[in-house]
Amino acid sequence: MPTYVNPEKCDGCRALDRPACMYICPSNIMHLDKSIGKAYNIEPDQCWECYACVKTCPQSAIAMRGYGDVVPLGASLTPLRATDSIMWTVKFRNGQLKRFKYPIRTTPWGSIAPYDGLPDPELEQLRKPGLCGDERYLGVAALPTLTTH
Image 1 (tube, rainbow, N blue to C red):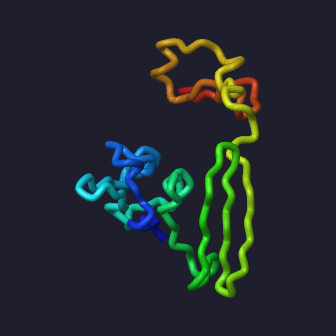
Image 2: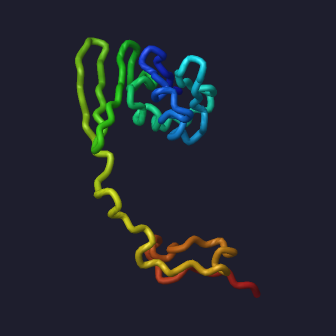
């Protein structure tokens, strides 16, 4: 189910040209109505349900419409983002609250070196279908090649 923006909570990230939800949305469906300074989902049917906008909204103005088996009618699921984690709050229909805290990262910022141990790129390699590091990531000495007879 697509996300929706609560207009009472949304401040359009202080009416910036590009609020956080527009910046983070991979399908580019979040839009800012500059006349009222509020963001909204312009194509709910195109929502990927990644909930990146829900997790990044500094005002917690974007909610997710949960599926009946996960969030039954009358219940809610709300994320609250901190600098190191996301706290999910589940409110059940009977009013019971449960909270789950998940780290945003498991490694320190800047500690990942994805290209360590890989060869420098060569122009002729760019024309080939393989990707840099395929052998390493697949755990083989060399990739198989097609031979023509």
